[in-house]
Length: 152
Image (cartoon, rainbow, N blue to C red; front, side, top):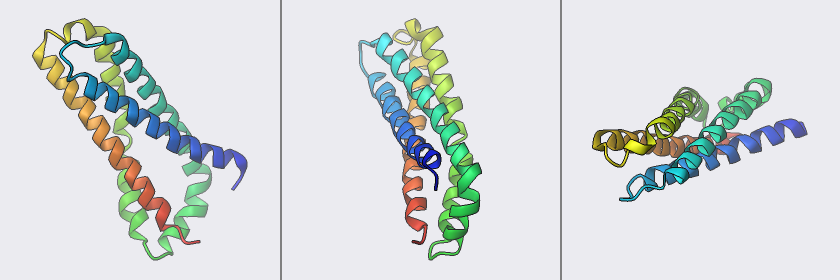
């Protein structure tokens, strides 16, 4: 594997984890009585950018290397279901994350001042950020399963 592919894969993982951390921060900070809107906006923007960059670096790695070099090793190994079930699910579920992250950021950016007084808006934002954090964590864990399935 070339250096650019190693960097791409490492970036994909690190950026994904960074995004998850920042959206956990948004979710947990929304529970506070007094909201720090600046922190919420910063965290959602940073998380959104990290998800987008993770999406791009992971996509590059997948298209250039994974399909030809890694997938056959997983499918021919002891745990072919790691690709057939886990990777296929990951590929499709992950697509939601950048869009949900963008929704969170847009709501915080344009309606941030009303979150403290609008219970329905705050509840919806709490739900979206919980979904982002939980799906992001599930996607990260599925990446661990897939990585462990490759035969050496």
